[in-house]
Length: 121
Image (cartoon, rainbow, N blue to C red; front, side):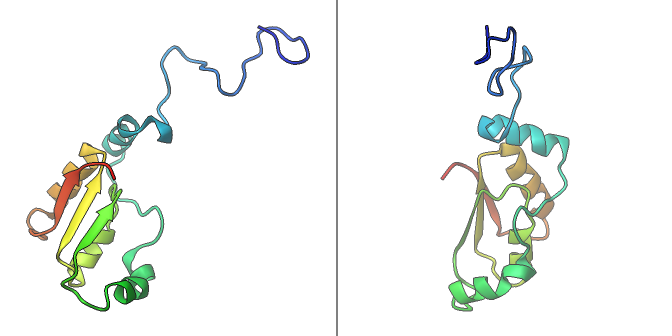
């Protein structure tokens, strides 16, 4: 195979180098399951509850009894902090069964009404 300048054997960025395909964000559930098994430590991708609390209060009209759907929850602690602040009608969803299992294990005793479901949105 040659490149635009006639060179031989040049790998293009999109070509697979290894015999085993690499997992990346685009690999979907397999990537995330592996990531959460490898590093189960909770992680906030964007902001934590204290940083977005004013926005949540505004959207919820300061009603603690509102229904909350946390889409793509991963292993974030956002829902846990919201629950502890009084928002207890929370459903967390993620495509990773590993993330949901870890979240449920962390919260089973302390936050019994918080739910987690494996699903895509």
